[in-house]
Image 1 (cartoon, rainbow, N blue to C red):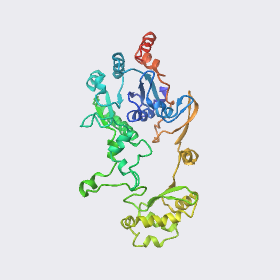
Image 2 (cartoon, rainbow, N blue to C red; image 1 turned 90 degrees about the vertical axis):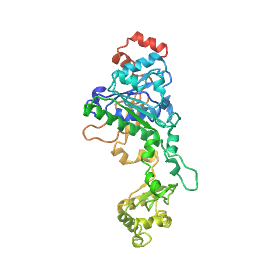
Image 3 (spheres, one colour; image 1 turned 30 degrees about the horizontal axis):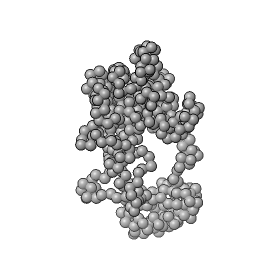
Image 4 (cartoon, rainbow, N blue to C red; image 1 turned 90 degrees about the horizontal axis):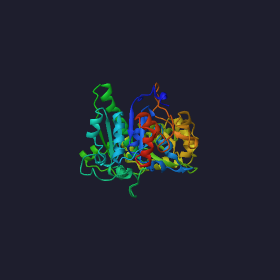
Length: 402
């Protein structure tokens, strides 16, 4: 299988993924899609909790098949000294180690950066934790929901009259994975392309990517402005709202420029609105947002979702129906873009997954295999890579080391 990675951007890079759930491992998943050899290290007999999240079918965790695709699974008890020694042997022949334990955990296992750096000065240690490796909150526990709240996202999500609402996806977890993958690639570039040969530590807190994209800092710093919940509207752009159609579906549209607003007014058969002093500029439209959205909502409700979507598309107004996963499966654009692909798995046969993104013209990423069974690659890694005998491997397994 590895021969298929020869032309991929990260071919020849070996990554040890010893994290759990999403924040650390998702970054490793992205690296694997573009050629990195990712060795997923899991607790013997237990495995990563991600194996059972997202629904189970015929005893197989459905989301695991996508989340851990292209990874090799080995089992290893890092709480035991012999397990720690085996990981150190893997570190010697690896480029990257990704973890997302609480700060100090690796150090308690005698696997801190000083020990690992001594074994392999080229190693990049990517550390994702709830609040980072430093600071007064470093020892606090955190999951995605904590990070979105602490990072400021939850506070501004929802409607003014309701409590803050959790985002519909694990935004903090997945964004941490994306930032982590980016950081690893930059560290590899520093080490290899610049020929420094130097490894380093990457320290990323789970809440930090959320805060990084919040766009709230300057308005509070200079204006004392605290952004509150505004529901589906954008406090800086109008019209931008969700509207219900005659057949009970929902569409979202946005007129982000004056020209688009004029096109929308024409599509509504209300060209006079474009020159109305209340709506002529973005500033004025924001001031009169409520009445403007009421007018648009009344117009939208005279059409079915498909009808109004066609009108808006023809007019050049950005709009779409609200898509459920069922809508996504039926949409031809998703098929044309290979956003949905069918993958053969040894566990369940063919199963649909989201496709690899972004698309490269010369070195596109690939799905080489689905998320593996627990310990599926023990023999390949321990015997093939580290040179353990079958007898030693069997002994370690009987003692719960592997």
